[in-house]
Length: 278
Image 1 (cartoon, rainbow, N blue to C red):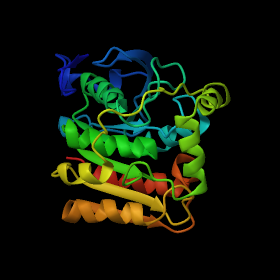
Image 2 (cartoon, rainbow, N blue to C red):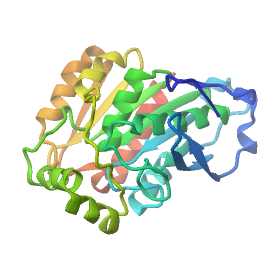
Image 3 (cartoon, rainbow, N blue to C red):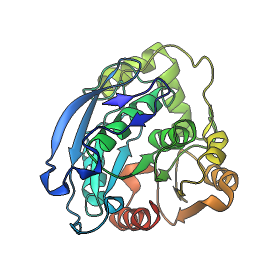
Image 4 (cartoon, rainbow, N blue to C red):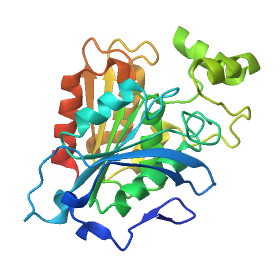
């Protein structure tokens, strides 16, 4: 894989000429620019491509899971299976999660993990890359698109708009998990998530600050009106920052992230991405 020091991906010599029909499912460990191994899975998808169509019709979804998820979790596999009906899918475990190396920085250096996954998708010959993130992953896809660019569409589901939010009981529990030694032990042994003990220095660009930098790539912001982690002022702030290049879906009765995303919503996300990416 070829990634420059800024995290941008470069096409491999395989390029879009690599035939879709020759791609097969595979699993590998990618390497980020800061030396972390990232457990990653590629599924060529079940979508049918027209062999006479130009390479721009070749779409891959790169899925960024939420905090304490990983590539083998059933809710992550369900998302991947749903999106595979619309194109190929790359899933991966963020640092500190599952079989990936390193320790979680809860959305900061995870941008480099996503950059590695996007680079792999490009190397496999996909002309269009869409990133789809949930919760922590939702904030990561926003920051990745702002800082590295080079993706064709961005979907952020259940993302916070700003850092250090403690306005709900679930977020107060999450802050205890991340900031306290006892909490990090619970994270390691209870949730299979290894969390870095260091505080952010410097504090990374916030999601709401990142959003205006994503244009011209189309952006979809999705949030449930029963999200127990982040109330509706978060998606509304993100949508306001996006302006005309963003779209907001407030989903009635939906809770938080992958667990709460119904199959119909995943289908609509797939349809939206196919129509907007490229």
